[in-house]
Amino acid sequence: MGQNKPTSRFAKKTLLLGAVLIILLWDVVSIFIYSTVSAPVYSATNDSLNLAIVDGITRTERSPSADTYATGKVRAVIVPHHLVASQTIAMGVKALASSAPRVIVLISPDHFGRCSKLLCTTKGSFKTFFGDISVSNGDVKNLLLQNDIIDGSDLFAQEHGIYAIVPFIRHYLPEATVIPIAVSQRGTGTEESRAQALALISTLLNRKDIALVISSDFSHYLPLPQAQQMDLQTTLSFCSGDTEEILRLQNPAQNDCPLCLWILAKEAQTGGFWNPVLIAHTNSATLLGDASVSQTTSHFAFLFPTIPTPNRCYKGDIEQPPLPLNLTATPNVPLLAVGDMFFDRHIRQIAENRGENFIFSCIDPLLKSAGSVVGNLEGPITRYPSVSVGSKIGTSDNYRFTFPTTTAELLARHNIRVVNVGNNHINDFGTEGAIETQHFLTQAGVNYFGGLIDAEPVYREELKNTPLSFVSYNQFGGRSPELVAHTIAVEHAAGRTVIVFAHWGEEYVDRSAELRSTATLFAENGANIVIGSHPHVTLPHETIGNTPVYYSLGNFIFDQYWEERVTQGLALGLDFINGELAVTEYPVTLKPDGRTCPQN
Image (tube, rainbow, N blue to C red; front, side, top):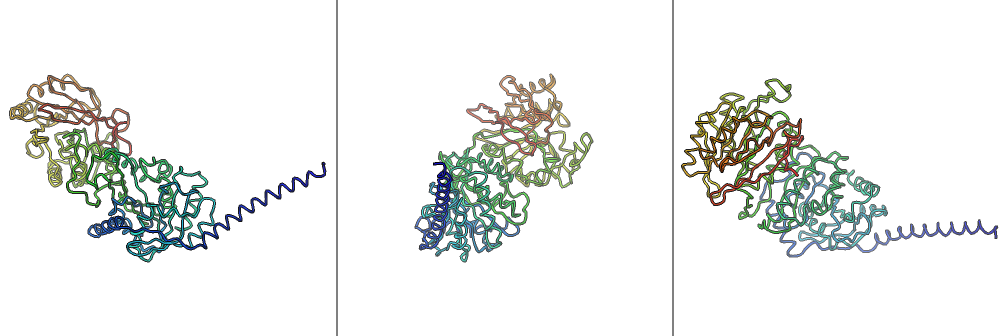
C-alpha cells in the first residue's frame, strides 16, 4: 500500500495541472471565438435620440467654441450621457475634435450590471444618424488578452452611456474609431484590479492619436438645492486632484462612476494633462424649467488639455448652455446680511492661484438662495498693487488694504448687490482710492452706502414690496451717533424699514456699555434691525424694544485663522412678513484655503 502513495500524489497533481490547462485553454478559445464571430452592429439611432442630438449640436454651433477655454491639445473630456444635456455633450466632444484624435477610448458605467468582470468591451460598430462608426477591433482584441479584468459583452446594445455619445463622436470626428468600455458598478474594485485597469488604459493613451472620453452623470435623485450643494462638494473633491477622495465620491448622490473619474485622474496626472477646465455645469431641473421636481440629475463637462489653464476648474464666468427664459429660482429670503469681507493678503493670493470664484464656491448656494446680499466691504477697490501681501505681521503695511479691480464684479456674480463702505479701512488709499472704489462698484452694478465721496450715507431699495433704507454708522470717522439717529428717524417716519450697519467696538472684544447705549439710541429712533461689524468675532445679540441688535456678525471673507472664534461668522436671512421683520441665522466657517462654508 505504501508504494502506491507517490503514484497517487502524482496522479492528483497531473489531474490538477490538466484542469488548470483546460481552463486556460478555454479562456484562449473563448477570446478566439469572440474575435472571429461576426462583428455586432449596435443601434445608436432612433427618432427621439436623433432629435436630442441634433438639437444639442445646433445650439452648440450658435455658441462660442468651448475649446477657447483651454490651451494646448485636449487629451480627454468628461461629458454627460443624460440627453436633456445634449448641448453639454456636444460642447465637450466638439472641443476634443480640435485635437483630431484617430481613436476614442469611450468609458461609461455599466448601468444595468451586465458586465461579468471589472471592465467589459466589444468589437463591431454603431449605427448613428450621421453614419456608422467603427470599433477599433484590433485594439479590442488586444485588450481581451488581459482576461483577468476585462471581458467581451453584448451589453452595449442597451448601454446608453455609450450609445448616447457615439453619434456626437461620429459627427465631430467622422474618421475616428472607438474603443467602448463599460465599468462595473459593483464597487470600485480591489487595489490590484484598479492597477490592472489603469495599466490597460495607460497602454492605449501612450499613443498620441488616442483620446479619452468619460461618459458620466453627476448628482442623481436629489432636489435641486441639495443637488447644487452636492455638486459643489464634488467639484472641490474632483478639482483637488486627490485620487483617493475622487474614488470615495458617493454613487449615485455625487457621481455615477467614481472609478471612471479615478482612472481619468490617475492617467491625466501620469500623462501630464491633469489640467481640468470646467466648461459647463447644468441640472435637469433648470434645463427642463421646473425647479420643484423632487429628483434631478446634474451634468458637468470638463476638458483636459496638455497646457495648464489657470483658475478654470472651479465654476466661474464661463459660457453655460442657455436655460429656459421663464426659469427663476425662488429665493429662501429676500435679503441676506453678512459680515466683514476682505480681498487682500492671503485671500488675494488664493484668488490668483485658484480663481476668484473658489473663495465663494462653498457658500454660493446660500448667497444665491436670497433675493440680494448685503455685507461690509472692509477696504477700497483700486488699481494700486497690494502692500499687505508679503508684509510682516504687526507692521502698518499689513493692515493697509486694497482689493483687486475685479472685486466688484466678483461680488455681483455671487449676488452681493449692496455693500457698506462706512468702515475704518475704506480710506486706506486716500481719496483717490475711494473714488476708484465708487467707480468699480457702480460699473459692476453693486450699490453702496456709508458716505463714500460725498455720497448720501443711505441706500434705498424695495424688496418684497417693502421699502428699505440701509443706514451706515462708522465709529471710526463717520457721523456722530446723534446724526445717524436723526437719519434713522427720518427714514422711519417715511414708512421705510430701516437696516443699520454699525462699524463699531473693539476687535476681538465683547460689546461695551457704550455700544449698547448707541444701539438703544438707534432702536428708539426707529431702526428695525442693527447689524454690527469690526470686532472680527461674533458677539451675543439681544432685542432692544422690538429691535434685534447683532453687535457683530464676525468675519465672512477674511484671512484670520489663528483661533476658532475668528473663523466662525454669522449670516442673517431677513424676511418681511406683514410689515414685521423675521430673522434667520446661518452660521458660517472660514476655511484656511480661503473658502467660507456653511457650518455643519
